[in-house]
Image 1 (cartoon, rainbow, N blue to C red):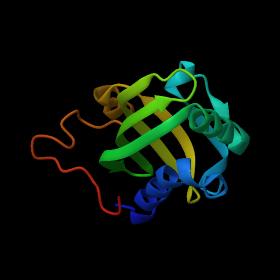
Image 2 (spheres, rainbow, N blue to C red; image 1 turned 180 degrees about the vertical axis):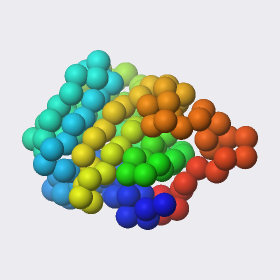
Image 3 (cartoon, rainbow, N blue to C red; image 1 turned 30 degrees about the vertical axis):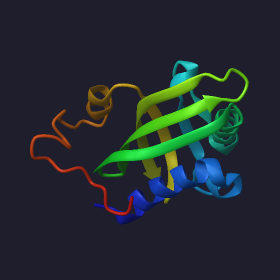
Length: 143
């Protein structure tokens, strides 16, 4: 298990809301990000990653992200997160879970795919659905 990968993903989440410059520092120049809000239309590079981040942060007057489970496989990390928020313009309350698949390259986040289904996220990583359940322990060191 790569402690560095787990720490990188933890920093990515920490800096997502709190520090745009530090968040930028977690991104690989060849980043590919597939956000569910845009029907998984990919954005590329650090500029694309920052556009997604800034649009998301700007849309909410309140936002919370709790990491519930982390599974690592090679250079990939799957983080199950609970997202809550209150829309800045709409006042709409959001309470949802996402399963964020990360791939790390050269110590930076190079790939992000936002799954809305845990089983599909595990399948995309080539892992059995039981990971984290029924005797399998998720990797949570460092998060």
